[in-house]
Amino acid sequence: MLPLLRRTFALALVLSVIGSYLAFDQFYIMTAGGPQNQTISVVYWIYKNSFTNFKLGYGASMSIVLLGILVVLSIVQLRLLRDDTSY
Image 1: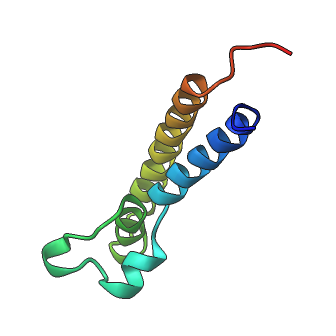
Image 2: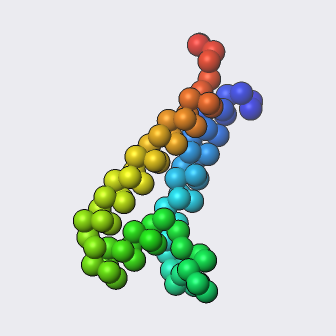
């Protein structure tokens, strides 16, 4: 049964990694950056630069770079976890 669930596990892993990179609200509500900015995530950094410092172009470019990183990471994960057997 586990070999049949391989694609499901791969999708769940990819979605959980993407979700962990896009974590924002937990860090913002609990610490708002924490002592000396120790708990800043990538999305919180984008938010802070875009809407607190009003660097909207810089925030947009950081969002595009984050999108590219997540796409490459997802492709690598799916290639490593693909099923090479054909049915």
